[in-house]
Length: 114
Picture 1: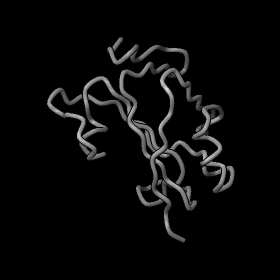
Picture 2: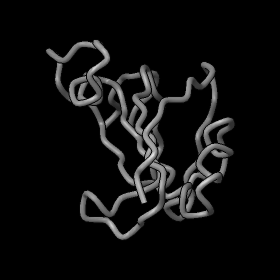
Picture 3: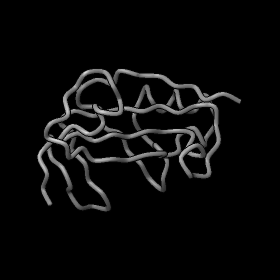
Picture 4: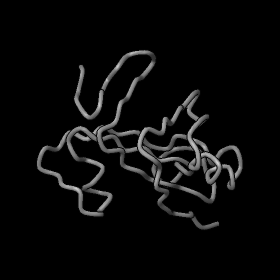
């Protein structure tokens, strides 16, 4: 079974909510991920960009490292050492994100708080 790779544009101000390792809120992304079943909503990757020299250019391997961004991917994780094997994997880079983990603010509008 091949991996579906894609991009979905999410409107500014959209909140993506992850609980227990699954995307529980955030349309239209959640609906797209559910096309592969409930495991399609698996949080496969979460990264925080720390490279002040990285620039936005359409190369996900550089884009996901831009200082003050976050990178999230949902769906399949088996190819990178995880346990979820579903026919979908969607990467995204969030510019000027606000990230809270376990009630602790980590980033606000792209500024590190820790």
